[in-house]
Image (cartoon, rainbow, N blue to C red):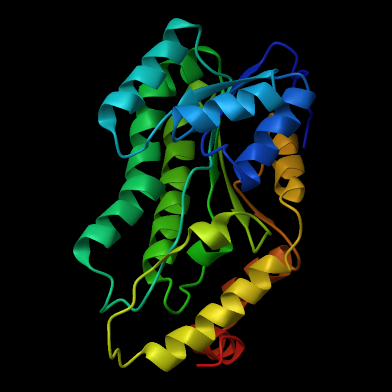
Length: 275
């Protein structure tokens, strides 16, 4: 890949930057010379982060609130638009498909897919004008459905498909689009996970075993700075990858999932999660 121009003077927005991957990405890009805007969900957290990271400008954004999406986008467009948009914000729902109620499922897609999509649509005029780059933070879970994480996996699969379609649509305008697909990393994602569980559930024992394995993997996973380095490198190339798995064995796993029969992959996943 060929390096693009240096980052100095370029403007980037990172959503979901209150902790974890988003915070690491925002700090990394600010250190590299970007003018960084970063979103968090409440004003108190924004103030705390601004005091610790004065080179980053924090904005309040709840991705289920259309008026906040419109206000943030209008502010950024009026200020000159963006060169890089990193759609990172999101969270996970954990529970059996049968037991995750409609309201919880709708919020999963509102935060992970529909809110970021609404923000992106509003920012595209500026991104086109500056021949910018949209980076979606998906997940390897979008390539393989995980037990008791069906809604989360589906939301990340949707992000990958949106990224692929946008890339083709925006190519004539000079706007690049990439989907970064992290595996497990040690972040606040584990603690913010929403767990749906019904009393006397027929899934109770399997769900508990799976949740123990999931949390053990996440807590022992690498630091999210790895993802931040990859995002920065992608943002600075004129011919970035279409999709970029990130994490321990992530590229190998992504390749294997495309090669082995689906039934084999499912058996490996079930064995891994003790199902």
